[in-house]
Image 1 (tube, rainbow, N blue to C red):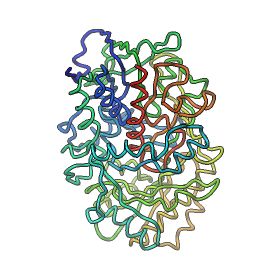
Image 2: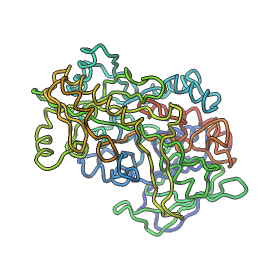
Image 3: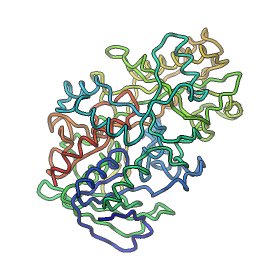
Image 4: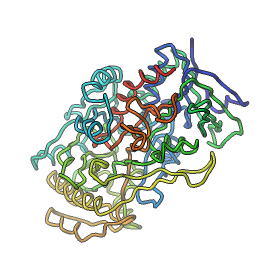
Length: 516
């Protein structure tokens, strides 16, 4: 049986399809699941709201990339606009536009899921063979420090000078040209995303993929999903064409990622006894910006190859963080840098000499830290999402201390100047100025906070009263509905989430297949 990829412009009339499994979403969760089900000989239909884009479309044009390959044209944010949210929206999902960092789920996180949230049968030993297979299939290998760009070596050198722990990142690439534009889509197909690996293989084995098709509602009867109702979008305008696609499957797997997966369930009246949309975690990020005398050129070279978890565990009641560096592409940098007028213009003019450190905060692992929520702004299929993520003293303390640590590392590596992401940046010219961060204001919209990792919203656990899916990823109140993506994580991870999602999807595919 041979499958096919079809786009919205090919769907010129209403259609109803029947299949074994309907997979909603084509990212890390959906991509793995689609292949594993197709390999078992099951008839799989995959729906993807975003477009089908190949390396010919990845032309390194930032303005085009953010508006085309990201959710809400790159403008997704929390309801109060205090946290910007970067999330993929294309065939391959986030795997097509992320920075290629691969980490296995830390064992202590899996232990917390077991001990605190009641997740059963999921530990590092169970997941190890799934990760082994994925690392071989996707060529996940450690990136040598000798091949790191100057931006990453600044972090490496600063960490070493201060005696902090440091490591090099594993990346899912093959014959990488180190262009530095991974977030815009890979024009050489070096990035081993779902787009160029598992999805094409699944299609060869018979999977039917429909791009530009937005799942709007799951129809249920008697505790089962009987149909997925979707609308067709015009690939050029991203607007509905008026045509509908209905998929009647024996089993449905929702793989739209945190925010979109809980949103689809809520639109369908599936609230999980009030738990759907709860415990959303964003790995909130603050950025420390530095300038050096010599060129850094952080817009070229593999973008993320060095990390440190030195500060991931700061003790009970204190938010910890992972240290990495981002690529500094011009448009991305202009959005991340604060300040107005000449001050902002001056920072952009010095972009070739700039370095940035990001502190990725580990949320959801402390008592009382419930993260945020996903809700609907109204009723019906066409309502937009309302994402809330309250920031309080717990977060502001961590952001302040993370900025101090980052500045200390940057100065240790030779920075001439470091500035904070406040609306009125704190400018420091030596380590003696770190105290200025204590006097700066901390509050929503006073400090730029970002998120590139979204988790939770459909958390798994040991009880339908406290979780949305059980330990096999099955929705508690529907026999043939599964959620297979990062939205099932009961907490955040403290590492980049792609490999965790890949591994759990590979492991979870057996449970989905058994339900057919």
